[in-house]
Length: 553
Ligand SMILES: Cc1cc2nc3c(=O)[nH]c(=O)nc-3n(C[C@H](O)[C@H](O)[C@H](O)COP(=O)(O)OP(=O)(O)OC[C@H]3O[C@@H](n4cnc5c(N)ncnc54)[C@H](O)[C@@H]3O)c2cc1C
Ligand SMILES: *[C@@H]1O[C@H](CO)[C@@H](O)[C@H](O)[C@H]1NC(C)=O
Ligand SMILES: *[C@@H]1O[C@H](CO)[C@@H](O)[C@H](O)[C@H]1NC(C)=O
Ligand SMILES: *[C@@H]1O[C@H](CO)[C@@H](O)[C@H](O)[C@H]1NC(C)=O
Ligand SMILES: *[C@@H]1O[C@H](CO)[C@@H](O)[C@H](O)[C@H]1NC(C)=O
Ligand SMILES: *[C@@H]1O[C@H](CO)[C@@H](O)[C@H](O)[C@H]1NC(C)=O
Image 1 (cartoon, protein in one colour):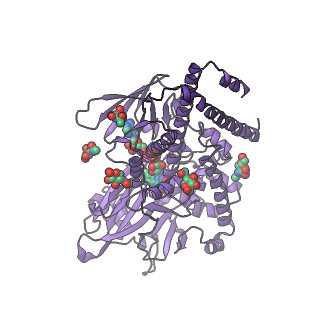
Image 2 (cartoon, rainbow, N blue to C red):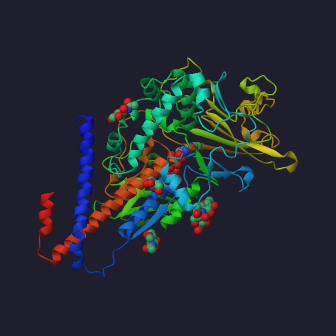
Image 3 (cartoon, protein in one colour):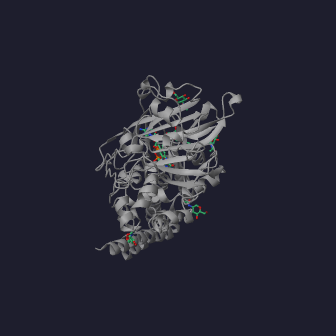
């Protein structure tokens, strides 16, 4: 089969599926007369493991689907952390709850329907992503290659400040924009019928015509689409580095395009995790924080027994039975044993290691460190990085190069602890290693000494760093080119959302997979309910009309 006939076949089988449901649905009235209306259907017991974007969206969507089908459902969410949100979480600058800043996922964009729709439904306040930036300089974004600024963008709210970009890069920005739109539109086909819901992300990717973007590196994809290497290195790679800590020869073409889809960048005031907290509220799930699931024992006809424990000093394992279990986070970090082992457990894939350093300081980022000698110079508000021309680290996972960090952004200002000092700046550094005190002092324009290479931000005096928070994340996988993705069903009634992360790793795609799992699950319930109704109908009358119809199909 060539790819287009395979595509048609896939569409066809989906249509056939849908048709099947429509027909069985029409048979329901036959069953009604016979079914005893006094019977109470027991609620479907669903366990969701993980209260991040994927788990919260699973619970939220499942509640909606189940309510629409009038199927009672009891959802329990297990979360081993003490908070909702997973990799989407905030910390408070100067420990003041009035100053939350994102420690993990900070931005989503206007085409991210799951996040945008839920924010609206929940009445959350959404602001443009750079709303709180101090804007004390016209230079909003600079791309540093370790030797010089390869590119500086003046005040503008988007990458597509076309005139300036064209002056420097010719047609590359326009070509990139078109390619991004084209690719994103294909991606959006995953949201609706006939592709949605999908039992195989691999087939869905193929049906959407996206395999040729995930199969190749960003570098190859851009070159193939006639995007100049200069624009690729100076702008696009700066974006893949800040978003994923990866250079273009490593990261695949689809994730590269996602990095350029920045139109309408926004975040939720107070923290993006509020979306997931609100979704869990609407799902009426029993949310159990500080609960770690350790094993799942399943049988083909269910139920599955979950073993879990609370994070106390002397945890005693507890068990509960569930009809459906959803593992909503990367399998390799979940530490769960499944018995018997599924036919295929998700492969372990390399994940990025990222140091996030948040801090407040009275100092501005030193222009001198970045070789700006003009005494009035300001460093750009956001400093992204790329590799210098001629440096090709290939597919190396250690790709930071001479810049030594991925990004430094000025997030906002806050009132200084001592009101006499006015305001302090709040910065965020992304780096592959823990920043040394020497690096911190250098970028703040402070005198350094020999011992500073072995100390860190905590060793700087309060007058220079009034508050800080360090965190090491496993934020996203290395998104190598690939053509197959882990399925959302690991074993009967054991679901998995994490496969989508090697396709696109964002809050929105985790939410999409959460809704997908909820849709597949409720579709099964619906089919089951219809079967039961048919059986009752058959018991009630000797007619075999429905059997004949089946044969027709
Ligand atoms: C620094 C950083 C920056 C990022 N920037 C962005 C961005 O700007 N935009 C964007 O869209 N995305 C961004 N991301 C990626 C984004 O955070 C993730 O793709 C998304 O949040 C993943 O959601 P998830 O629900 O799939 O997984 P997670 O958020 O990881 O949730 C999984 C949850 O499962 C829990 N869990 C795991 N195992 C168990 C167990 N055995 N028992 C109980 N609970 C368990 C975990 O504690 C966790 O809370 C960023 C990530 C980081 C870290
Ligand atoms: C839902 O399931 C949980 C876990 O088994 C249980 O504690 C709770 O009582 C159930 N709730 C309802 C309303 O049945
Ligand atoms: C979870 O554990 C943390 C730290 O041990 C504790 O502060 C918090 O109150 C606990 N939360 C819940 C809901 O039990
Ligand atoms: C989001 O809302 C829009 C407008 O109501 C709707 O068309 C779209 O299907 C919704 N998307 C999702 C994923 O809920
Ligand atoms: C990828 O393949 C699809 C068809 O499957 C085609 O429409 C599209 O042009 C190709 N994309 C690129 C960027 O080559
Ligand atoms: C979810 O419910 C809790 C408890 O009622 C409430 O405090 C919280 O504000 C709600 N979250 C959102 C985002 O609405």
